[in-house]
Image 1 (cartoon, rainbow, N blue to C red):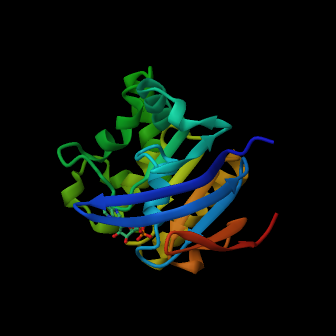
Image 2 (cartoon, helix red, strand yellow):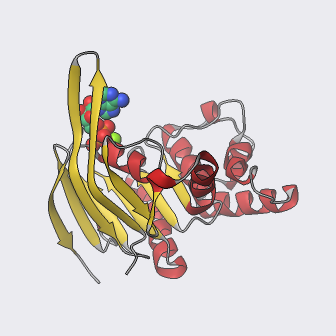
Length: 230
Ligand SMILES: Nc1ncnc2c1ncn2[C@@H]1O[C@H](COP(=O)(O)OP(=O)(O)O)[C@@H](O)[C@H]1O
Ligand SMILES: [Mg+2]
């Protein structure tokens, strides 16, 4: 069986000057299609590093990431761009919104490289903003929004292309509990109704209640996996 995501002996060592820092040590993670997995671990345990490698935003020192059975180290730049824009929706821990574009512009951005008509782009962007209760912010710039609102714009942008895989790095880190619940429910709906494969990075166990599996990361290694439901 092909997994949606599989990492094999994934190793990442950051080098700065003479210092080497092992951020991931032989991580073997399997995520089935339509599985909803949480990765939990303390700050510095390698969660963002792991997600960046899975999302093809960074290259491992050793090991391989397979997306639907394809080893991503074998993809050329065009194929990688295709993977990132069509298949994977990435929610960055630091949002990475474009400051000079308004909310609509930011959410429409992932559709610009596809052949989506301007009218359909607008329609899809407004729909996802509606889902995330952000429709009234459509014409605001990121710096006119609260941290939590910017975080939800980043989520809207990741979801707008209907990706088969969503990688979300602490997507509720800056949300109050009510708004966090809205995001968690949105992810749950994507997974149960849309069959979207989700990896949710968090250090808040409360938001993992809908996840099939919780993977615990510590010092760059998986130390425990707990199956919550099938
Ligand atoms: N670009 C980098 N250069 C050097 N060290 C890094 C870099 N990115 C992360 N690290 C280090 O790798 C470890 C894991 O970081 P990270 O993956 O961001 O952890 P988490 O997301 O779990 O907080 C941390 O100790 C961090 O300081
Ligand atoms: Mg992180």
